[in-house]
Image (cartoon, rainbow, N blue to C red; front, top):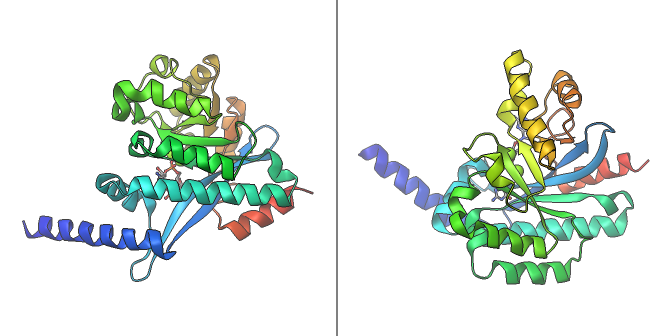
Length: 268
Ligand code: C2E
Ligand code: MG
Ligand code: MG
């Protein structure tokens, strides 16, 4: 009981601090580059939020996003992140040619999509930062099917109407079947890190990944592998025909200044 009480208090504290963080500049966006695996060209980036807590230090999004989701704070958080990320790409595109074709992936929660103000917000955002068509991608986890239920098709169509592409994140960890996903306006599948990290261990994992990639290709999706850490994993994924990838082998999520260096390095 004492333990439970402690946990509840801890959550309350974090929630309180998170509200403060949203207003007070403790949140920052990092960007992880995404590459076309065959050509090794830089094609995009994923925005990943970081929270520098004044006393706790760096708090992982894996820890505070679930709290934000439970408390409803996620709507404001996701909107803040979208705004930041779009502004950043917009700024880079005005500075550098290579950023002209970069795609931006932003993670959003089901709760955010369901919020009554969200699509109005998107319209304002797109007016303010008019990125070229199809350059903004939203990453939704596979759970989205369960979370949005019968609303899913109409909500995803509202995104499609705005030229926003959809990527299914952490694919393979949930229970959705591809044939169901196929009835939705989705363009990308992100193969979960757990498959990639086990690629070298045995042939069976390679076969499973091969199947996912094959299905993805057959259904006309572009595939992205997340969490590529070794040259061997990259080689296997290239052989299996995976389209895109990201991971520590290329670069970890980087603060904007460092991502800018990378942009410059790739523009030569
Ligand atoms: P995700 O969207 O699947 O993000 C990928 C996670 O893998 C990131 O963790 C990234 O730092 C990590 N990663 C990237 N490359 C490698 C690698 O080579 N090896 C390993 N071991 N890890 C790698 P992060 O940044 O801690 O984010 C965790 C999760 O938190 C994300 O998973 C996403 O679901 C959520 N999240 C992060 N930022 C946001 C955000 O801005 N909004 C929302 N709604 N959720 C977010
Ligand atoms: Mg993601
Ligand atoms: Mg993921």
